[in-house]
Length: 471
Ligand SMILES: Cc1cc2nc3c(=O)[nH]c(=O)nc-3n(C[C@H](O)[C@H](O)[C@H](O)COP(=O)(O)OP(=O)(O)OC[C@H]3O[C@@H](n4cnc5c(N)ncnc54)[C@H](O)[C@@H]3O)c2cc1C
Image (cartoon, rainbow, N blue to C red):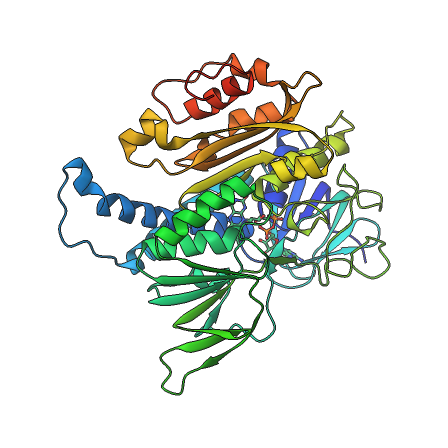
């Protein structure tokens, strides 16, 4: 078989990991092709980050309108037409997709349509689709095939009772009652927006708390806020099955000796890598039992010229921006430039439920488990002037610092935020954690007033032992 086209880099999969590699590589002067079986943009643009945030924005607008009386703004007859929100989502996604398609073209990145398979000798065959049969030769191949929702035995996705995030994000009408199985990031975002829009929600979580991986103080705030909004949270729940009623109105979800009658079930128990058929036999890329691709910290698979990025990488957080960062690492590696690998323990996390959560670095429990003695400070948003002005005071900023021998706060280990627009406020915390800054170094930086970010500044001041408002 001879290759028809030759590129510096062929990327299999045009999601965030793949398109970031392509754009950064093209900016560095490399010739790049993407093989994409569906639409460039991947899960993030079409079935993940963007559609979910679009619906969360509908929920935020609804909350604002419901609370408008407090500001003297009268509104009567609040109604919800979720079909309009769905149409708006489609329009936003479409616009971003066209923008991305144009950007790729503009950078002379060739996109081939079909399912790509890596063959020996850095060749990629397009197996189906418009470009079926094409074989692309590359000096480097980047595997970026992403992930799909993890399914759960006893809960077959049927489009009627049981949905994953894929089906949920296509709804035009919301069910009146929902069980969300899994209280992780996606489950909590969906539960939050459903509750805001009038659906009765129960979260069933197998672990002892929702949002595993988040700092306990942040989880406490989210749990309190969710319960206040009528969301039931059942932890330690081992779901078994569901049985639709004879009259077809509800289905009964069973977990141990408890059960719930609901109109729909959303399964959000994680995502599995989509690597079946991605690599031909004998190529030597190591794919583990669960389908994840093994790489070193430079995203190398161990096969010369074959790299992997994004949700398929073993041990990496499944986040779009992690895929972006890994793409940059790959391109620098290809160019032989100095490169700093992505430190997965220090990437920023964002959860867009209400109240919003954003964090970076170690939780207090993780720091202690790693052997650190720590100093922590917490500044609740209740005392923040901007939070009071906007009428959204639920939440807290918590910073975890290493304790020095003299008992004072030293290096910043983790920054954890929950409250209004915290995903937009995390960048200072991200820099502090990744620069391994000391509390007194960060504390000297000024925050604008009045602003939500003053809590970050005040918490840092408190860590130096001289908080103005916070002891
Ligand atoms: C509901 C939801 C909300 C989310 N919200 C956020 C968020 O707010 N922030 C965040 O950072 N992350 C979020 N994520 C996670 C984020 O979407 C993923 O981490 C990200 O999309 C992974 O990028 P990727 O490039 O690895 O894979 P994907 O985005 O899955 O893209 C892979 C692409 O490869 C294509 N493909 C697969 N196999 C082949 C093949 N053999 N040949 C050709 N093409 C192939 C697929 O069609 C797809 O387009 C969310 C996910 C979900 C489900």
